[in-house]
Structures are given as structure tokens and as C-alpha cells.
Image 1 (cartoon, rainbow, N blue to C red):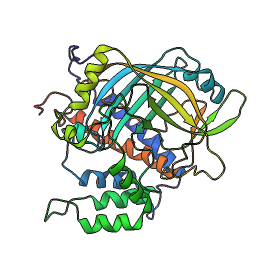
Image 2 (tube, rainbow, N blue to C red; image 1 turned 180 degrees about the vertical axis):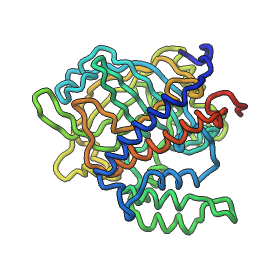
Image 3 (cartoon, one colour; image 1 turned 135 degrees about the horizontal axis):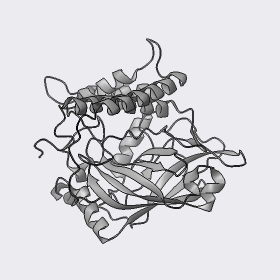
Image 4 (tube, rainbow, N blue to C red; image 1 turned 45 degrees about the vertical axis):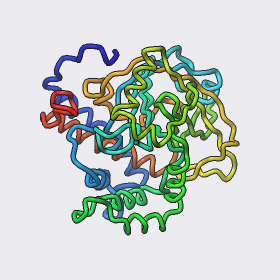
Length: 364
């Protein structure tokens, strides 16, 4: 389906199945986060606390994701390689043309944000293989995470809550946070110096976390993966970003897809001794061995208000046999917070208070 396709029929009386889906996803994520030591006592964080803090950083937008609120749905396929099948017994590496449902988005909680001005761009995918298993991925354009722990990320989010007196975050709190965490300063340096691409299609997206691949022989290897664009990189300078339309990335991708599919190669990196496994703020050197395990092809797009990706939780711990999460506590935290956000926005949609998110209200 493309942007020119007729909108789907209004979604009526969907709250019962959606509530059930949200409950299942929430229970699974909470169970994992409990076992990872992320929640479960008064001294630990909770997904609700984290989500409340994210919501406090900006205006409320019912029915939208709490982070990466603005995006579009995309569809296509994934074709694995023999090298991928040698690393993991996940069916996606041996099946021909695995169907893909995904979402391209920008960072931030504003569903009306200027796309070309967003420093962080994201790709989320659902691969559904013919054995009934799913693999969901949540990737970003930054090469490493900005903080070393979930607690540090909560500190950062709290520092970004606007001061009621000024309507802006307190500079002193932000400065104190940066002084405390060298990882955050390194991320800030990346954000200031790395060139901006002019398209979702020529941007690289990184999983940043470590995962375990297990092959048919029972051999397990740690990996980190990225989606590397086949489209050539073209830089977008500050003046071009400032002049770009509000929906620049969506419009640009629409034109590209009208001319033909866009593709990324999925590459995994293999660590060496001393590389951080459970800390995504520590990148692996570029010199690590890289293996191409598949190719992602996107062919069509659709506005998220009526698209199939709108009601999908891209939980990075929904994994097929042959792929497993590491002991990274931030990975566990993301899973739990995604479930909390999903539950809240689906309840808002079911209650009828999210007309804009569903395409039934007036949009800008």
C-alpha cells in the first residue's frame, strides 16, 4: 500500500483485542526486566516511572509513541545470506523473501516536528518468517548509546524537563549531567560533528546492543548489527535543513520509492577480547570483523495514522529461535518502557481520545 491508497475502514470496537495484546506484551517485558534486576524493589526503577518522566519533557500527544513520535510505516522484504545462516539458525536467514513491516521515524516526542531538523533518525522492523516466528528490531542513526545505564538515562530525561518558570530545561541541570557522564559528552560531540544525511534511505541504522546468535550446530557468537544503506550518502547542510519542509524526509522517501525499492545490507560485527558486551555506550572499533547476513528491501510506505505499524510495539527483545538478547540492562529497560508506552497509547486510542493519532482529527 502506498500513500495514494485509500484509507482503511474506521477501526471500531478494537479496544478488547488491543488491550489483550498490550497486556501480553507488558507482562512479558516486565518479567524480563524483573529477571534482569531492573525493576522489583523500591530501590529500582520502574517502566511507569520512566515513561512518566519522558512524558513530562514535552506536550502530551494522545495515541502517539512517547518517543520517536513522528514517523511513517514501510513494507518490504528481507533476504538472508549463507553467511547469516551459518551464524544463526533463525529462519529469516534461510527463507526466501521474508515479509517486513517497519517504521521510519525521527527522535523526539513531537508528532509535528520538523523532520530535517531531527538529529536522530530511526528504523524499526518486524520480520515474520514462515515458521510463525517474529524478529523485531529498533535501530537508530547514532553509533552508540549516550549513557551507560538506565538510571543515567533517567537522570538525563529528568534534566530535560522544562522549568515551569522559563518553559525550558534548566541549563545548570543539563551541565551537571554532562559533567557526571563522559559517555554523554562523547555522544554530544558526535551529534555536533557527524554529517547529516539528506534521506532516511541513505542513513545507517545501528542496533547498538549486543545479541547472541546460535547456529544449527549449537555454536553461539556475540554480535552487534547495523543496517548499511546501498544508496550513496549525500550530506545535508544546516541551511538546507533550515529551509526544508516540515515533512521533508517522508516526502523525499516517497519520491525515492516511486522510482524503485531502497535497500540496506544487514551487517553484524564480531567482538574481540576486551570489547564491551553489556554496555551500549561503548562502541566496538570499526576494525572488527564485519559479516553481511542479509539485505533489507523497502518498497512501499503509508502514513502511520492508518498504517499497520501504528499498533505495533517494536520491542527489541521479541526475537526468533537462534537470536537471544545479551545481559545488557539498558536492553531490558527499553523492552519494559516500550511495553508501558504501547499500553498507554493503545488505551488512548481505544478510549477515542486520540483522534489525531488515528487520522480522524484535524492535523497540521
